[in-house]
Image (cartoon, rainbow, N blue to C red; front, side, top):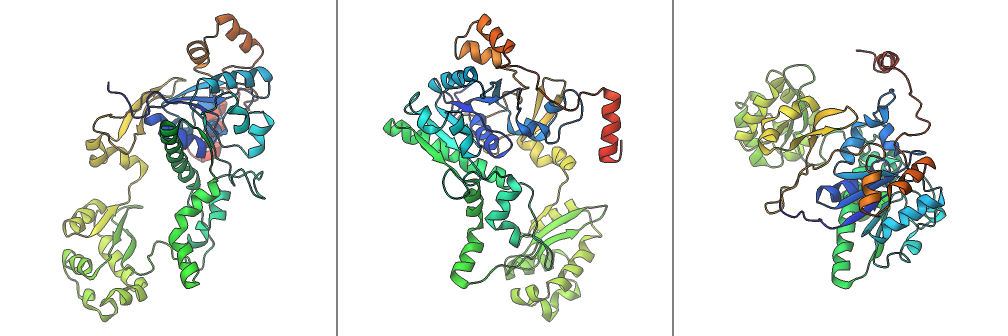
Length: 429
């Protein structure tokens, strides 16, 4: 197997939830060795999102499994000096340290950047608090929805006359993507200069950069964009239209008069396509409601994939809206091998996971390891990376510095009780 792009880079990863793990999973996919650190006293909360009310339910979180593949997983109680000492020993043999706590957490542990450079002077440290490490809000805690709200995105997301809408935690992967790029940039700088550095990445600011168009519209035109649902401010038709069947949809986007003519030709030039209300782009925007109704009456009689192929053949941007179930059977995904079958311990079985979206011709990537179970790699990392003995490792387990069984997991119930509870939550079998 050829060497991977980031092979040889070791990351000590103390990130939790989604934003930080998204940054490190991209590095892991590219070949970096990620040592994910959590504790049995306080496992990564991402394990609890979408998990199951069963004794091993913390191993069944789909989002955790997706965001932590290709990583090693260990447990360390960083509230104890022994745990912090082991963390520091890992830093000494690592290249990168990542964390997305509020700033006071690493400072209280004595693991802030100023402390770590005494151990590894050229270390690259990525800190990803919600609001950054400086400023009046530095110690405020956040989740994706809070970050998204402050970025301004929800104020333009939603339907006319309706409330602002969240997009669904998009702030987390947005910050994660920028975090991965920042780390790779810092590593390149270190390669040239020999110097590490601290990366202060505010999740709020990362998300706000995606609002460039709306921000510039306000700065240049003193105009606050209104909520308009699926529509565009100057293009029509532009939206999602019903197709034959239950909850089946097609997206159609027209951006020029040439495309409008191609669209009209493709659907057979019905009489309404020559209506003066739809004679040009501004007119179509002004009469978008009437236009959407007419297009919907045409699409609803047809299968969405047939509509997509018919319009694409005419050079019109159109795409089926796929359910998650349909994605796995989509011929295009299958042909490109995008989903990879991954088998995981903890009786999770074998499931398809989305692979890395970029295909490298010289250094092909793959999902090499499933997400680690709690403390799965304690022995491997402590022995092979830190050369610790069996006796030392056993002593750490006795003192609960390391471990594999989370403390305080609330769902220690048998299978029958778990199934009953799940039926109550979801309202069905």
